[in-house]
Image (tube, rainbow, N blue to C red):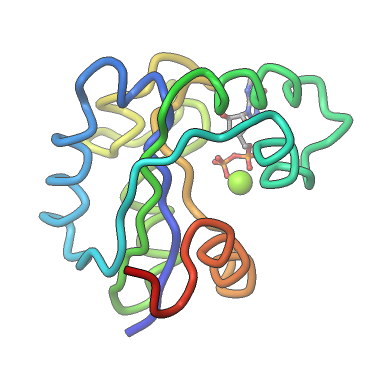
Length: 136
Ligand code: IDP
Ligand code: MG
């Protein structure tokens, strides 16, 4: 078993799809190890997505991620990172396979409902961004 980080993006929380997305993830075989509601300020969102700094969609992405509460969660499964990428589908919902989270709940390539870590190494960094050991 290993872990990955998912974040339900603000527009998906605001549109009332968070519960359905969480159920979808559980029904796909993930167990929730940690979950919270968070409001990102500009600096935090810019740091979280700093790998994309300079790309044409960066400003839009930071704006989106600071537009309202997000729901980060630590998910556990066998090969969690790869499995979650499969369950959420392609970045652009037009290319996301039928029945994936982005196929069902994304509005556009930017407003694509959910973030997922892309490697085990990044998953550990991203988990540490939102959760610290032994917090209660
Ligand atoms: P990922 O979320 O599938 O890993 P990345 O390429 O890491 O995709 O991009 C991070 C986020 O930036 C995407 O989830 C999406 O919200 C946004 N994004 C990526 N490419 C575009 C684009 O071409 N237009 C608008 N937003 C984009
Ligand atoms: Mg990514």
